Length: 318
Image (tube, rainbow, N blue to C red):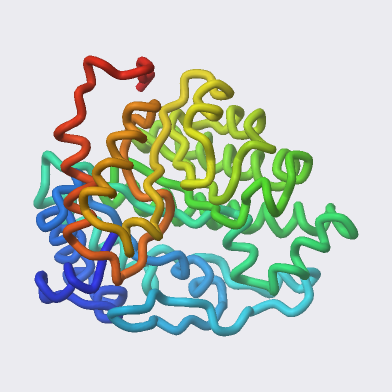
C-alpha cells in the first residue's frame, strides 16, 4: 500500500525501504497514519523469496516496484540446484527485523505479512510459459518443484510470524483460474497453498489468500482453500462469489485503476457498493500503483467509516 506520496511525507523511500528494516517499518507506519488503513503490512514487494532462491532482482525506484530481471532456472529439471530461503539472511532477514520493530511498538494494529504464493514464486524462478507447459508434459516434475518451493515458503512464513506478525496473506496472482483452469488449479495450486496454511496454523491469528483475475471458473476450488478470508480482484462478482462460498470472508475489491485514476467521490461510492454487496474487509482489488493519490486511499477508508452496516444485504461470517 506504499505510494510515492506517502514515501515523501514519511521520508522513507523505495528502494532504501526494501533494504533497511527501520525504513521499512517507518513506511508501513506512515501508510497507516496518512491513509487511515488499520493494519501494518510488509514487505512491499513479491521478489524477496525469488531473490533468496537465486533470482536476480532490480529493486526499482520510488515510482517502480522491484522486479525479477533474471531467472535462476532455464530448465525445470535443474530445480535441485536452487538455494533454499535463509530467513535470517538478505532481504528475508530485513523483513523479519522490520516486523519486530512494528510488533514491539504497536499493540493495537495487526501486523500483516505478505507471502508469495507457490505458483507465482515458480513463475519468478523460471520463465512462466516453460513452467505452465510442464504441467501438461511433466506433471511429476512440477510437483517436485512445487514441493520444494512450498517447503521454503513455510520456512519464510514461519520466520515472519515468529518475528511478531499476527496475520499472513498468501498472494498468488499467477494462480488464477484464467491461467490454470479448475483442473490444474485443483492439482497444482490448491494443495500447496493449503499445505502452507495448515503447516502454519496455530502460529497466526488469521490468514488470507489473494487470487487475481476472474474466479468464476474456480469457485468450487476457492471454497476449499484452508482460510476464512479470500481477497478478490475487481473483475470477480462479489454477489456470485458470495453465493458460491460457504462461511468465507470476502476482501476487496476496489479497482486499482479507479484508485489511481478516479475521483475520490467515485472511489467512495464504489467502496460503499462493495460493502453493501457483502465485502467484509474493504481494500484494493490487487496491488496498487505507487502513483495512486493519497486522497483516493483516504476516500476508500472513509467508505468504511460512513457505511450503514444496519442495512447491509448480507450477514458477514468472520
